Image (tube, rainbow over all chains, first blue to last red):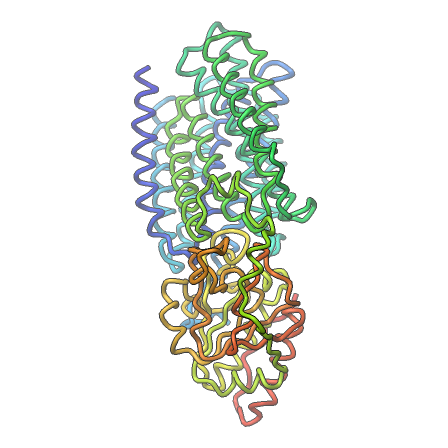
Length: 97
Length: 475
């Protein structure tokens, strides 16, 4: 139970940090924010790797494999698409052409 | 978890926070994305050294497949299709979280009874991940127009939702009470999938900014729950950050539509009430303007504000808008863009589209920053926007959109509206702006009208000696 409690501490503090940090993101970057946080929750890939690494029956092999595919789709797709969007933003000064 | 892996996860947590912090400015934002990606790479690499790991070939193949599909589609996607891309990636994350929770449950039940705390988080993780997976897929299908985007509202959907929520909670309760063993997890996931489907199915395309934000926050929550299940603090931190971001954006979008979240999810909006149409003054007429007149009016005005809406994205006319704005700027006109928070299909979507068309971000203004400037503006050009410019939201207490913050375009000296027809917008409400004597309509496809305007402005100002900036290549 102490471990769950520790997790709850981490969870609550991280939410507070999240609100603080994300409140500063300007509205013009809200789409990249969304795809960026999207990529960050792709960190479930780590969980997928851990459970897939412990699989030893047909059912768990299949489910673990699927979880890793979905997780890495999320991570790689999320970061690439965010990068593409962010690279397009530029100011009037220092125009990129 | 051995300590080197723990340190790697700690570093990754910090890079995620730093990455989001760097998103506070478009100048530092790309660096932020790299920082977060680097942290992610460290964390993934460290995970392979987890004690008792096996099945490396299986994992490797799965990762290569996921990475190839993910990065490949991310490279090719059009910027107008960004909302559905984000929705589908979001669904993948939710699905992965649901699978992880289910797998952990199978593991835990194989070696005895899971602890109560673990069982609750497993149940909730599987449920919320599944809801997010199904909901995001439906959102994707609607945005990709593989499914009808209009709101489908039946009186029973509300009860169906409530019933499904109760069944999900009951199944989570069964898991927690260790009744039914491992066989409960599959029905739980199944009912939760159905719930996600029924929840998003009735919601129309115009409400998608809220839904995508909500699904994003649900996947964050599901990721955090898998962190509890696996005692993995990195997953908890990342999930909490995403949950916070999704929640903030959901609130922001709901506020910009002046509708509480419950109304977006279960409300009866745009049902076509007859009273909404009856508010027009007697004998109101619509004035049309020719392309040449519109071009001359804009070319000789000191201050012009362009208001792009979703219609611009549909017509893929962001490049033409930029070309027109460039010509006007060269003719000495002060041109600005005004963006409503829900212009587009996800928060900030219009900014991305304009950035793609090479519009400098410092010419693009948010609603609160520019609303005070309309009274001193000579011409407002509204392109494919409707409800977000409707003055009824400010004046008509009987209007369904009364109270919704709008761009006060009707305060400008002249308003030119590019629009296909007089058909009302998503909300099904007539827009008194179009009957305002200061307003002139230019009917037609937004992209064609803009092309004609560009040509007309060129001939209206033949004395402009400078060569136009390279017009954007139209893809």
